[in-house]
Amino acid sequence: MLGAAPLRFAPLLPRASATACGANASQLADGSQSPFLLPEAAEGDTAAPENMHKWRMVIAYDGTKFKGWQYQPSPPTIQCFLENALIRITKLDRKKLCLVGAGRTDTGVHAWGQVAHFTTPFAYHCLDSIHSAINGLLPPEIRVREISAARPEFHARSSTKSKIYHYKIYNEAIMDPFQSCYAYHSAYKLNPHAIREAASYFVGTHDFTSFANAAHNDRERSPIKKIIRFDVTEMGAVLQLEVEGTGFLYRQVRNMVALLLQVGKEALPPDIVPVIIAARDRKELAKVALSAPPHGLYLMSVNYDDEILKPPEVKNYLPEMYQFLLPPRVFLVQNCQS
Image (tube, rainbow, N blue to C red; front, side, top):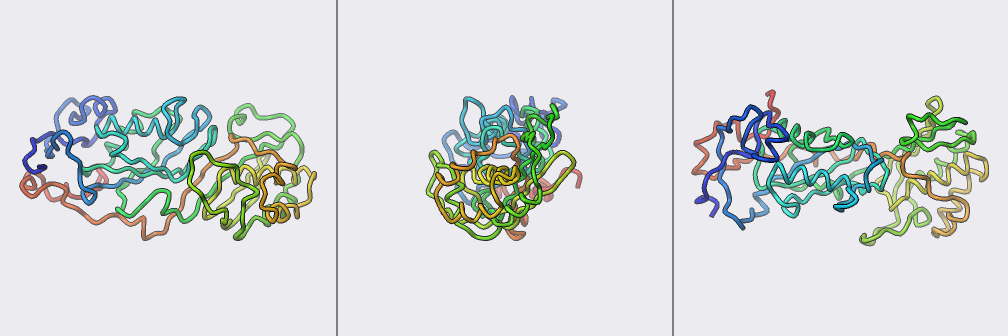
């Protein structure tokens, strides 16, 4: 029984170091112990779903060195590194953490606004300390930008309203070496007006079967997707393509960009886009364009309805017999500076 279990120190409190979180989650950076106590569940106990707490993270990463987002231990992935950090901090296994990302970015794809959620059977009084601890355990190419409490019904993937991707093209004869891992190089001078016209044909609700690669180990997904906007912006030598949609099929963005590159080179007319869409056949696109490489692609943001992003209701997360140990404010998940 949880109420009869022995006591332990709280898993994380203000300014816990990354090392301390990995080795002794109750020890603060200065070596002192936490004054706040939590009940420790006996080995083998599992928390009921209603007692689980959900946390939302916004994550940025340079995808160059990683084998994409989706979990696999070797070669390493973004999800693998995040889970390892959370396991060290929370002392939970990956099954209990249930880390889920909004988008399964491919090898070499970058992100500024990836969103993920995970669960714990306990709450955190101060999120600043766990935020610092996670980043302290991650490689420098991965950073958790934000962490906050999430409502029980929030789901990083299925609650998504829309996603925004950028694709960067460096359009000069000589490539900037500092952008070689972060933008596709087109030495051929592209026609941005033709690309802009072609991109406009993608806007709306369409069957994007022609632009989807076969996904491995994935469920059946409807090919009907809505593109909200597709903007083309000239920024000096960089041509930035920005697309927002309610959802995307596997490699859909890179395949759309591939066709736009051919239009930009004036090898194809802008109105080829509706023709390829109407074909609903991936082979038709393959006849005229290869998939654009991953290193120019960025997941910039994942958008949700305001209602689902509202803070969860305040819970008293200690059993009644232990509540006298903590001041009332400990029941709030809040910023340490408050």
